[in-house]
Length: 209
Image 1 (cartoon, rainbow, N blue to C red):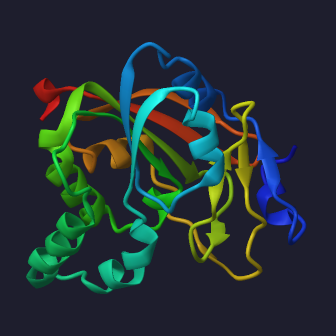
Image 2: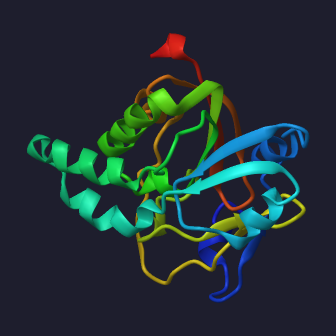
């Protein structure tokens, strides 16, 4: 599959994408232990079905609901307003140590400062060696103007919804740029996928903060 395959994907046809890093991350979870996972995007039936065989707590933030508002709040004067939106989005109730944070393609859409503020808010909730998984546009200078719905099937592959006809510029963040806005995280593994996106896994350590 060529690097531009995502842009050539037929409308209405989801792309089944092999994502080895994600498959290993979820496939490596111990069925005998309890796991706490935070999904920054909307609820995904495929993810719920995939995790159904495990003892899991899955918290769903769905930051896509607030994306346009967060993007509008760009100045330093709006930092407090951004933090209020992010804090309100966090799961209520007694927090449990987060072991996995799933970003999907949201890091391409969230302003980097917002990403840094979110991870700062999450810092006290992160388990030692928590991991963060993300997909970023790498090969193409363009991407859909809004985040795609992405979720796994039972085989561990990712189903990516059909590309929207309207495209915008892709930030094409480097791993160094991403890591500098993910406080406490360091890049652990990466993989260039068949649709030209880069798959990243970051690991948290309090020593890195």
